[in-house]
Amino acid sequence: MIRMGTLAASDLDLVSLAPLLAGLAPADLSMLLDGAHMVSYPEAELLFSQGDKADRFFVMLEGRVSLFALTETGDQSIIEVFDPVCSFAEAAIFSSGVFPLNCEVAAGSRLVHVPAPQFLKRLADHRSLGLALLAGLSRRQAGLVHEISELKSKSPSQRLATFLLALAAKADKAGGGERVRLPLTKAVLASRIGIAPESLSRALNRLKAVGVETHGREVEITDIEALRRLVRESTGD
Image (cartoon, rainbow, N blue to C red; front, side, top):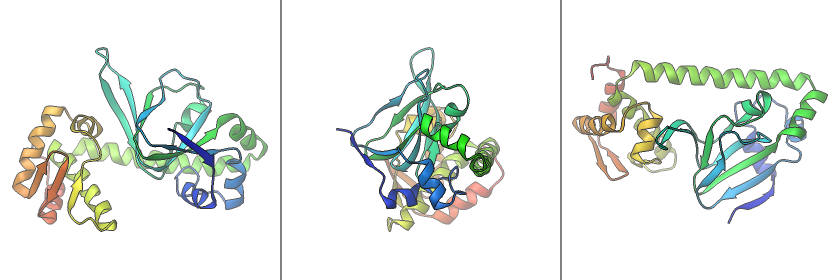
């Protein structure tokens, strides 16, 4: 059952880490988010569908959400996967007023829902805050351009290795060492890093040569330096 509540001070501290909102003073952030609420999702569910009215945007504090389009055959094509802490779907409230894609929220996620009418009115009343938000959007766009550039220049094996290294870095911070669990199904992961599912299987097999062993969604990295060297190599797949 979805649980909804008001924002705690600790939630606002996390929200301030989102690139869109990071340039705001605490008082301005609190003012802009007055009326926002926290929603916890114990089960995975559809957050919104393509064509729905964009009456809010979101800040991801815990968990994961996936933006996806539906192909002509009804299959999901993952466009982007969001991890904490970031905002998403804000472009729709500033432009068309409808969500251009579908969005699924993973079980165990916590999202801040920010109502669009109040947010936009406060921005109109405090126009100087718009410049701070534009700076945040520019930071996020720069990050996306860098990510796309990285994907285009890497082979399937290197793309997968880059993803696994990022997971390992998070596991190190949490005390998990070099054994990680894939947070996505293999089909979704393939779409996320821009390769075909069959290419993902081949990439997993190639990574065995640099000490990567997979057991379902559990992945053991026995030689992390070898994995890093693979990412730095010129493409050759």
